[in-house]
Image (cartoon, rainbow over all chains, first blue to last red; front, side, top):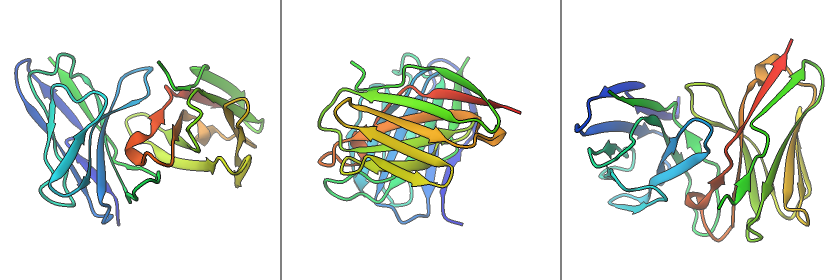
Length: 115
Length: 114
């Protein structure tokens, strides 16, 4: 079954700790994205990657880092510099085409809670 | 500045009736619009889209209408079913932007009562 797998589904972190959220896709999509959702808010883009070994900041990249060493994987690290990390994090992928919007396929999300 | 607005945070309808979810946008460069449905603790799933060259797109019980002059789109669900209860996100982009330029609204929580 093709899809996007995020892990862990729930994660608790103490203040000052870095945590890494995993995102793996087997859809053979070139582009991958990380979004954050807060209650009553839309989805806000953290980082995205259109191709392996390349990624770009989204609207709220501060306090986050990513890597794209493989096409299938796009892990997100929430660093201690992120001032309000408690949120629901969503990974997505798409068939990126230059100059065109494509449908985003989302994972099931990871809920991070900072204690 | 919100470029995509869903002014109703919630909507409640009876099973079998029509659900109408609204979305307004401000950026006249937007020419592609999507609706996503999201259940609690799950990722959004794509529902239906419309390009600005059309004013209507239908898929089963779901129809999206686009009024470019008013910068308004709406999602109609007929007939509504309890399983349609979810948060619906409207999203928009300009074709020159790519998927990373999708702008999402804040969502409308639909409750369909049996």
